Image (cartoon, rainbow over all chains, first blue to last red; front, top):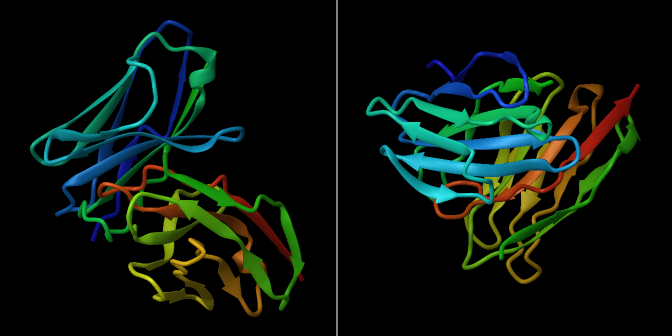
Length: 113
Length: 111
C-alpha cells in the first residue's frame, strides 16, 4: 500500500509570493490534516479536511488555506509569503475517526527568502 | 483549551538504559492517546496508541499506559538501542485528528 506522498520535497520562494503544496493520502483515507513544524514552535495544526469539507481549523492567519478533492488528495496554499513561514509542512492522512492513527508524509521543506 | 505537556530534551542515554518520557494532557472528554516518532530526515510515524483508560499500547519494546486519573501517557522502554535515537511526540486525538502535539523529546542513545 502506498504511503502518504507530499510534493514537492523542497521549495524556495521569496517574500510576497504564494505557494501551493500537494498531498496524496493513503488509499481509502478520507481525512487529511496539515501541520507546520518549526524548531521553536514544534508541530502546529493548520487544518483538517474530511470528505472535501474543512472539519477542523487551527490558529493560523487567512493566508493559509487548503482544499480537498473528491479523490481525497489535498492542497495547501500560502499567499503573501513571510520569512516566518519557512518551515517543514507535514501532511497526514487517516480514516478520520477518534482512534485513527495519523499516517504522515515526509513533508515539504519551504524556505522563504 | 486542550493542551499537552511533554518533557523536553534532549535526553541522552547509554545503550541498554531505561527510558521514560513523561506526557500529561488536558482535554475535553476522553481522547485516544498516541505516541509518534520522527527519525532524522523523515516524517512522523505511529509508535503506539491507547484508546481508553488503563489501555496499554506497546510496540518495538516501547510501552505507554493510558492513566485517566492522572491524565498521563508516559512512554517507557526497558532497554534502549542506538537505533531508538529520534524525536518522540505525544498527541491526544480530538475531533477525529490530532489538534495538538507535545513539543517533542529528542532522544540520543550512545553505544
